[in-house]
Amino acid sequence: MQFLYLFISLFVVLADQGLKSYIVSHYSVGEVHQIIPGTLSFNYLQNDGAAWNILTGQMWLFYGISVIAIGVCLYFLFNKKYKNALFDIGLALVLGGIIGNFIDRLHLKYVVDMLRLDFIDFINFNIFNIADTAITIGVLIIFIYLIFFADKDDQNA
Image (cartoon, rainbow, N blue to C red):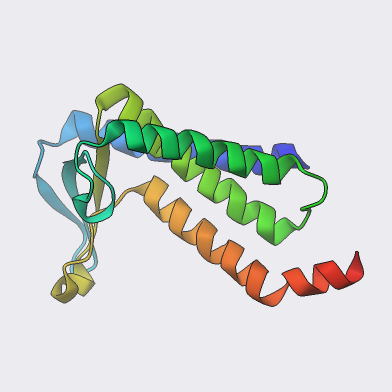
């Protein structure tokens, strides 16, 4: 069953790297194109920090955090004690997202971001990528599992 979750992670990595490759080869840095008018644009940025470009240039910190996070995700995915489909799907999404951004950091020394939500422009929402989306959705799924289902799994054990 773990291979299904690793396949989810692989799918995230391939989708993320595929879109990033397309953006890098077809856009100039800072170039913007509307994809869905008023809703979604591609806006090519190179981010050498974390969200909102904090900790700019701290690549060794990001390398370390990524390696630790990948190890933690793999530990929980392969540990028979922590078996729940919802939890594992969340972990698989997080793992794929971490690997997607880690590849950029290793290869480019920055992360390629391109997705911009135009309909929430009034709050200056961060420009992000597929890996960021997978991490966010994965963490939300893990929180839902922990809040609503973890106690029930413990009682059934």
